Image (cartoon, rainbow, N blue to C red; front, side):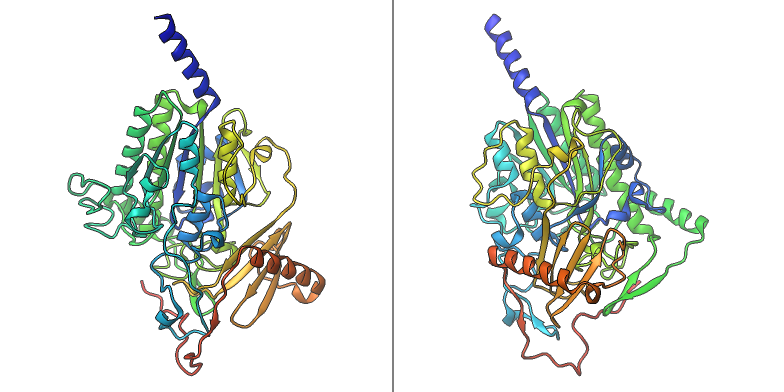
Length: 483
């Protein structure tokens, strides 16, 4: 009896030293889609409360303007270029497969997260954590799904980039890693329920739960009750769509899309359901909660459902509307309540930060590209560093192949089609409206040299000239806006 009590006591001490971790990753959610980041149409009370109880990052970035590369970076702690996943999986992989009339042929890429790429889940499981994944995976075929990358449980994580089986966001789902629920059950709520079940079953040991939302990715579908709510709100506010132009595409300038707003609120309700379970089980004080997105919001394509203003562009673009994302972190005893952090951070930082959270800093990664955010969360400063992006593809949103570097207040974008460079002071010009390159040629040269050296160090692949490009034909980056 005494031995049993001693063992339970030791387990409790170990658990206290190893906080639980809940990671929410939303698909295609723009930074400005949350009320706490300035949305005046979408309603996100649970996330706003999370922001008030923890830290809100104002300059958080995804590693890529599209999904698969940024997810690979988040889970491995490495630049996407190291594992070779540099475009969304499902895009043409070889230049010969390209059939759009564009100046360049996109670079090749790898279509799966190889098993030798160690993930956060694998590292945490080695440290005694129970691990769980729910939602969108989109990192390769079946033998590369979450259960092969360190997750003990996988609810819904497959090769597809959206809920494209059955009735999509409603049951039956026809998902090989998620049983169908009652007809009409909502996928977003179902995955939240699965997450709470895992938490309850593992409340007495350290756990890592990742709820990787399919929301708010297309198809644009919403619960009928929430749809009606935002139809009434839209009418009450007398909102009118406004449009601008970004390259070859129209760009939405207003947040007033009824279906999208309903999807955002459904996502917020799901987060609230999981957080309520932590509270009910008295786990809140020993659980790190992280909320973020994989890239910026859709503003130039696929329904044009949101605006990222004052950020420029959106998903698929190298402007900040495509890569600056929401990031909320609540780490009890570490984060200051209501903290607002302006230091630039990026997807790869989660890996070393969460390893540090376990109390063990040793990793077996050959390259650790992120930094530990613990000092920043405590209110200290991080050494200034450069953040990099390299997207040698076209995507579906009208953007062009490009690379970028941000250091301090400055951001340089190199557009590959015409070898053009743009320089922005993103601290004082958040909308990237004024190219200051002509006024600061020395800074342009230095930042481009920095970017080029990084590209070489990660063996970045580049697009090549398209011999079939015909400037007399419609540009392959264009798309007509649809309702």
